[in-house]
Amino acid sequence: MQSFHDNGADLLWSRNLQDGREHTKAVTVSNGGELFTQRLHLRCPVEADASAIIAIAGDWDVARRLGRVPHPYTQADFRFFIEHVVPSEPTWAIVVRRSAELVGVIGLVPHGESRSVELGYYVGRQHWGQGLATEAAQAIVRMALEVNGYAKLTSGYFADNPASGRVLAKLGFKPVGRSNRPCLAEGKDKPSIEVELMA
Ligand SMILES: CC(C)(COP(=O)(O)OP(=O)(O)OC[C@H]1O[C@@H](n2cnc3c(N)ncnc32)[C@H](O)[C@@H]1OP(=O)(O)O)[C@@H](O)C(=O)NCCC(=O)NCCS
Image (cartoon, rainbow, N blue to C red; front, top):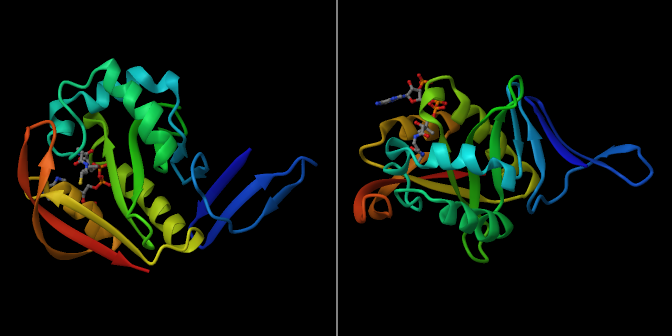
């Protein structure tokens, strides 16, 4: 069992070795590492998450704010996510520790061979406004910079999605330009604000 605890000042990656003792060290997290924050458990998405993820990603108000989520979001789309996206990109289900409810997804898309990575996330509409996206993203950002050793994180948000701009600003991302990014759900390119966070 591997886990990562974001305790504010302490950033720990721990691994229960075969001898049962828990050792703590900074290692490169590729995929499947678990992270814990005050309210959240971030873990690898699994088959059993299908209905929760289809319900959240299938919400038009979520999909239209994302680049790569088609609408409607079907079982086949979930299959593609679990079989192709999860194994190739570090991806976490955002789960509320107290209720064990899956409330969103967060992930990193590496930029080829460079030492930078793109952050993306979504949270179910009924859970917006509670600081959950920020709390999840803070842990992932710290892990990416302090454990994985990435030099830069990038992200982008559609101009009609200021809430995500606010999340990224709270994380310390700075605007670096504008572009048009494809939005699969709307079937067109939309104006986007590009942001970066340097290590
Ligand atoms: C963007 C999203 C992840 C935010 O999730 P969340 O858990 O509600 O985020 P948080 O509560 O951590 O923070 C939201 C911030 O945006 C602010 N906000 C909300 N609506 C806003 C608006 N219309 N304009 C400006 N700020 C807004 C909130 O007040 C809060 O800031 P504060 O803490 O300074 O008050 C969520 O709305 C979502 O999943 N949207 C659909 C998918 C998406 O947009 N993903 C990101 C793609 S780039």
